[in-house]
Image (cartoon, rainbow, N blue to C red):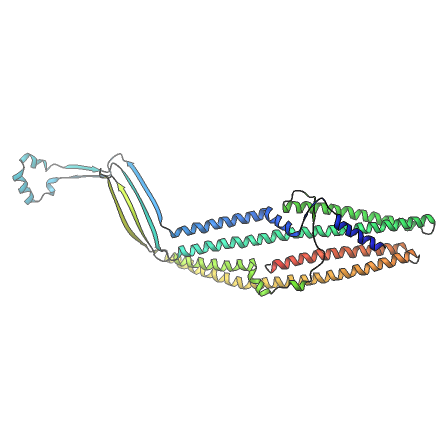
Length: 447
């Protein structure tokens, strides 16, 4: 009869508790945490920045267009010289001029003449230079920028995993406390029934007052446990509200307390390795090191570019405008010495990244196996806790019957009640631990 009352109370709590409150599932709380967590927003900023960097690198494929303009006014002409015309005339030309001009004019040719120009002026031009060959630096630079964007997205996945793990841990902590509160309240109902029966027996003189005192002490202990659990519930609700961005703490949660057997969740660890964000990040690290090595090699190769331009000036007191085509070849001769060491360093970094990928891949598989072992162990602990409840429930029933017929002491009955409550709490803890171990395994296998 007592067990039926306890079961009815638990079912009533499940059906009627928090009727007016907003009810959330685990997935809804995790989604809310992902939308309201700063770590996720920060990771999204990193993705956006990496995307802009990739777009910036793509512009290197296009011509580099630049324009220049200069106006100047000097305190004196920048080009000055003095010439004597007679010194520039050959004897034959001099004889011819002597027949054509009077002596006064010929005498003037022997006087020095000062010439100055470019005291002020305007220079302007625009040109476009198209890289033709740059040792693969532009192509590999774009690939490296794409790798950087991929890395940002993978780091976003890791941030999401961290946020989901924290939110789920808070969720199951709340579930554990709620289940413990139900257990304590059921124990309180049981003790109230026992207290009433013992009080009647004491008044009738068929039971000792000491039995009533033992029940009352146990009731005080239950009240103390309820207070602690209530405070724990309040704190976890506040944490979950803040972490998931909820409006207030007056919410309910929806969950199932039936455990899924772990055999259905087992993954092929070799295949799972390829989809984990940690392994993919290691692969991107190798790819980035390879591209950096190629860029270092390209920096020591000649670069070729072609271009076209249009220029204007009035340096000779006359407007001059002209267009031109040109080609440039740049050979980094003096950089070869240090560049060779840079290339060797980048090759070593690439080799190190490859070995790190291989080594950490094994560690990741070990992590998966360890997480799976924890899942199986936790599930077995849950099954043991479930059997303990059944045994403790039968022990409590027998001790209640024995006490009713007078062949058992009150201390034995209260001990049986305590064992039953502890068995229920252990099952609750085992269930929450199993859910957390499943979460760790799912994240370790990239699910």
